Picture (tube, chains in turn red, blue):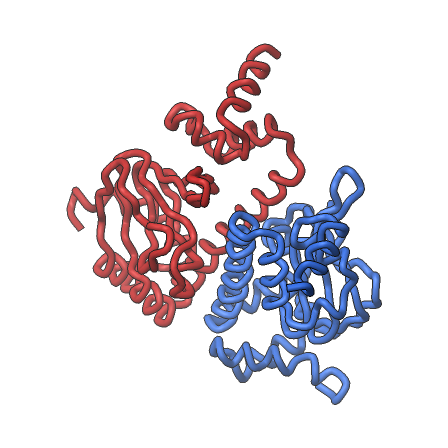
Amino acid sequence: MNAETDAPYRALERRAREAGIEGEDWVRFVENTRVRSIPKGALLVSAGEPVNDAWFCSEGLFRLFYPLPDGREYNVAFSTENDYVTSYGAMATGEPSAFSIEALEASTVVEIGRGVLRELMDRSHGWERFVRLAVERLYIRKEERERQLLYLPALERYEAFLRKYPGLDRRIPQYHIASYIGVSPVSLSRLLRSRRGR
Amino acid sequence: MNAETDAPYRALERRAREAGIEGEDWVRFVENTRVRSIPKGALLVSAGEPVNDAWFCSEGLFRLFYPLPDGREYNVAFSTENDYVTSYGAMATGEPSAFSIEALEASTVVEIGRGVLRELMDRSHGWERFVRLAVERLYIRKEERERQLLYLPALERYEAFLRKYPGLDRRIPQYHIASYIGVSPVSLSRLLRSRRGR
């Protein structure tokens, strides 16, 4: 590793250690993955296409969204610094991805090929654990979101968004937040005015 | 193991072998888990309560549902023979479960304590893999369901239900299917009449 590529691996290395990965197992990971810069507006994953990699976002911001038949887009999640970003189901099964992933800011990711990940998991209990914990995290978020959409009124969904993604409300246009909490941009503006008035 | 408890472990043992579990690792699992009979109508998990176990359903049928504030219930999944059944997020995090799990038929499960699962994963790469694959499966289903609710009209959601749970339409009341595909029981009856008329 050199100074330029070192930084993106730092947060990952901490997590890897927590899963019991060190020495040769870590070196092999670094040697078989690469750092990529993703320009703002680029698609990391396109709906309908297969997905051969997982990424760890070390800098920047992504949104995961379904393109709807009527032309609208439905945001299901965001990924920011020190978070995974991929279409996991598509990567695991080989099926085309149902959603797209777009960089909302110029971003830096560590790109991990599906074959590399499999090999690491075969060789090492630690990498198997690392992936188990990552998938667990993805799963728990889906459960959380399901619960929020079922139980919380729109304003509380907005508050939950602020807690889950601190500072993100200042980094993305409001219509992306509206699409995430499941209301129209107009309804969200109205909600936020009433919130400020409280 | 004896003849009575042997059967529930059989499908599990096959999956365990696929994940590379054998010998001592399998024996330890059998010795530290137990077979339980769950009467029809009993709750395996109650919304609002913590969850200390995962189960493998070897016989019978469960539904996972959110009790809604207006008194209705929203079915998110079913579990039948040779499938896992638990409130995984609650079990993994220690938080109370957001949903309940009810036996719709007299059922037989293998009960796996959370502490036992952790110990097995610590000792054995194979068990870590077993759990990683199980969580992956849960996650992929959630993605699938998300996609269906977004893209498919009600009748196609019903067809998807039939494909995913073969024969289940003859085992449960129609209103449970309606709640799962997200329409009222009246709308579902109407849909099914139009389907038969095609």
